[in-house]
Picture (tube, helix red, strand yellow):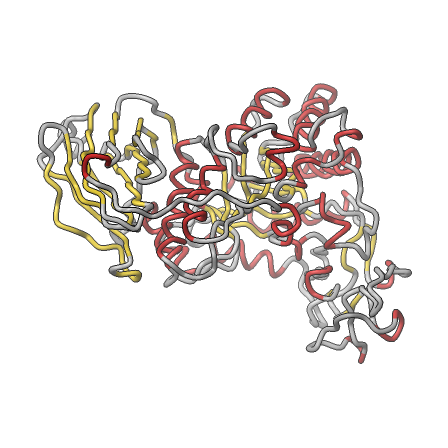
Length: 530
């Protein structure tokens, strides 16, 4: 969750200046449909649960995630959890007759109608919530006055505190079992059996993805009442192995994600307790060792969370380079002290997998580059990220903070999933795409398997209009390309523009400042029957 950003991003981020781009210095763009081809997984276009169901249907949402801090202590038997430090350690939901697993079942059914597949968090923390009745871990009547209290809910007349006494001391929960029960693999297996019974196995359209808890490296912060001393990564690994094996025992066709830890700090852990490795490396190494000993793969996705840090619109657009660029250093402490250079996050994680546990896919099940200010830059930054995910062969991604259907960032997903409002998609096969200045004009080209059309997204990340040439090779070209754009001119619509002429294998075009332009180029060598 986002509390990790302020804790770990301590240094300033380089800024990009907005300036007028003269014709002679404009970046040159090129797409070659015949080279650098690889599949783009639909799973990279996921959004966390809470997304509007009509919008989910419109963009044919491929997956959603039921996760976050509030799911760590979920007890499916009483269909409720504990919010931890996020909200006064409130447990329960006020129901007198809870239906086991009902809230999660409803989400799976609701989004499943639109084809979205679920990533469900399975608690591996040692304690989970006890009752559906409202409770809290630090009632003032027992623990005394605290710095902040819940102004809305008073379980049995109790005022619920935030666990910090008025003098700043951290309080200790002296009766964990008052509001919690022991977690166990058998209890969680009971839930997986319930999900399989209600929705089918993963192989038969049921829940395909399970996540081993949420940000275990931060349990002593968010869940400090039940885990006041942070478990070291060997313990987190051991718990992960136990619960992953339990999931696979019930549904061998399901895929498991882990460790799902937080930005920067969660990737590091305590190297001295991890064979000298970073937490993510150690986790992969130990999961590979489990397979070697037990002849069973129990981890399918190496999954982490990431929140790029930025300070303004220019740095918001530039910080997308931390996902991939081997020449860009954002100033993050983890780059300086542990990565010994630029973050280049996706290639770095892929290299970890290649070294420690080949065959594991890479996922970012929680990320966000949204400023919350609902600007065109939010939309452009998200489009940049989605384009990067496809180019870098990411296996799975899920954006945190579901957008309202009218938010600019919602149009980022429309550009990839329904740019014409009729369900037409950006392509599913990456093709070679280059810009001589990706910081000014970013380009992401792909080909649709269905009809062979090229879909080429160009992002102008400057405030000035840029006129330049886009050359296209490796495909039989028609005379024109369809054009769709999104800009400040209309934040409530992706606009279909007049077709662009293709002459001598090139499109000469002017890209407005802060805009996204999508070219759809039909393959003139294909017929409808192909």
